[in-house]
Length: 490
Ligand SMILES: Cc1cc2nc3c(=O)[nH]c(=O)nc-3n(C[C@H](O)[C@H](O)[C@H](O)COP(=O)(O)O)c2cc1C
Image 1 (cartoon, rainbow, N blue to C red):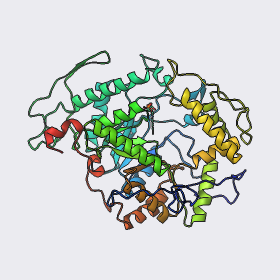
Image 2 (cartoon, protein in one colour):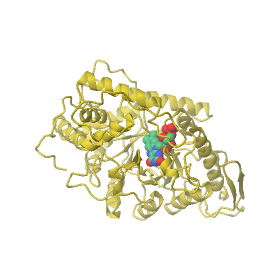
Image 3 (cartoon, helix red, strand yellow):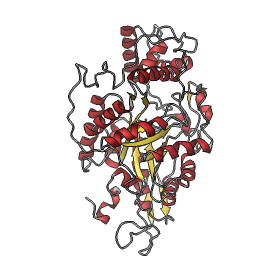
Image 4 (cartoon, protein in one colour):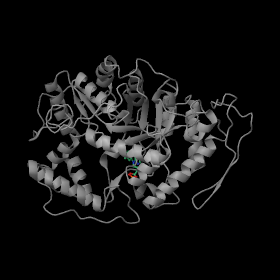
């Protein structure tokens, strides 16, 4: 990336406050910095790459920005990630173009191929990196989805993972015969039922003599799966044996109390939203661990990977300048207006992005039967009030406010400073790894792999090679929850 010599069209009145900046409360030199004890001095940093596909954080205007659908793009990103010993290549899921109040999100039109299909193709050109497919439980059917995920797991030699989501919008459901949108509690009930059926399917083939779930073994006969409830009717003799890692690894993304309980009871890894402020990440981790113990699991059984961004420069000043440029270019005037408009619940495209927030309070609808967005109802009011207070305190325009909020996300600094921060996050027990979203595709991981990874390795906080061949091994996970008795795992 070449940073243009021209400054942002309207310089920020308040520079970003990254972790490595002494103004940020996470910085060790900040007077408000709480001391977070190092509880896991030998813990290793793990990386995944979150290939977003559709988003406004990729800087499309940069000449280096490539296609989001060419196989060559996926190939370049995953090969770089594997060269950098990343554990996972992670794909979100969107089954229909997103919209707000009936208007499509322009940036979504870049497209998004089906995740499992894409990951199957990428399995063929990689050897170790994990392949994580986000798949929703609200509109998929369990037997079909379990089979497709297990197929990816078998064909990749035990590298597949399922990021379980319930999906928070109604328009996705209108793609399907059942249509519409399920109540939040019912979505999680369905998610649990779906996962239970999937596990029965994955466990239907018997273990080999050593109990390790060797592929292809069917000497003891295949168990019949029969599940009949209000949610599912499944009668099935499964067709696919277990992979070398037993089951696909289970990721989860959903942050409500029900979502956290679901993760605590089921997930191997949480893809979390809590990757900006260390104190908040620690609080989230403590909450998840409490819930895991309440669900009868060891407290370290659920790993946490927040989504994040990383921006490095060879000097602190260069990193800061680059970060400012990135943040400003991520938040175009249209993005700023649509971000604020989503919270205000109205079309603000006629507003001046360089002007103040609307004088009136948001027009808020309570959750209805067709919309399930996390940012509706009371939560919307709360966010709007926080934004207004921040904008007034710091005299921010709409665009400056959105830039300011986005500057709280992620890590920036020299490679050494970023490495120090990442190690601190992992060794205080706040997270187990990071799911990194590059701000440019396909070259956005280059600096991280070439500059940050060696700094982590020098600190003894990152492996020098993959430790195993399956995703479960590389993440250091225990056996699948329903296989533990069979394989004698703790
Ligand atoms: C970090 C994160 C990433 C998510 N990614 C997706 C996604 O790619 N596709 C999707 O349909 N939902 C995604 N979701 C939303 C989930 O569908 C989630 O289940 C929804 O927010 C409702 O659950 P909750 O109320 O527990 O948060 C994501 C949620 C989080 C927290």
